[in-house]
Image (cartoon, rainbow, N blue to C red; front, side):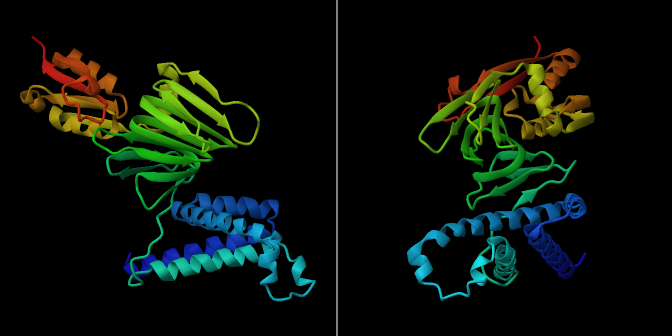
Length: 338
């Protein structure tokens, strides 16, 4: 596809999404709502366009509070009494469309350096894997993520995201509902759905800040669920390894190895895991490995190396090692059996 074709296609999708949002604001029939649902789920670009428009709509909706401000109202021209009855739902779609049009002209090629952060959205049965400065973010289906200008910060608008902060990265902060989840090193799964925010730590630890100065620490194997619309207190629970594997199942790609050098294989594993394989003896890197392994399951691969290649594995906590400058994490040292 030519560059001009891509821009034309993107503009068409934005136009169609704006039309749907405007129609929805005025009310959709059951059949129209189903058609809209099918439309945006069929293409991740459509899902992203809808997410951008909904975010703009939310920001514009916040202007409604000015309607009760007497000083602000006095600045407005005298309006016809019939016009004053117009509901915000009538004008906000046009404002949304105008904001998208302005964003298009401001961010098109040659328009200058101003560019809105991208919005990542997945459809049903669609997944995405993103990399931000040493942080791996995997998005489950029907998920919308909006990074801020600083790529170490993002907002999870809806859905589920798995965050893996690998050694040496500067950490990651995620806005989820009213909560801010911060992870310096480890694996964290955050879900936003039905007015609830859940945070599960599978490795390392994380902190949840509620915006009122209160902080909760979440450790490995612990899940905290926060009800943001009701009065139910936050619930904490410990998950067994089998339960965590069930939660993680959606984001576990498989790594197929066929006569693959061990050095190459562990490079692939280290991209997906907080626990990092390290070769104590570089000669081990030339051994050939075979099989299909879950990318997020270092234990299974370590067991295979012990069983099939007589390789000794040893876990070392970096924070207790001689390297005091390490940000934390765990190394799985590989050495030949005596």
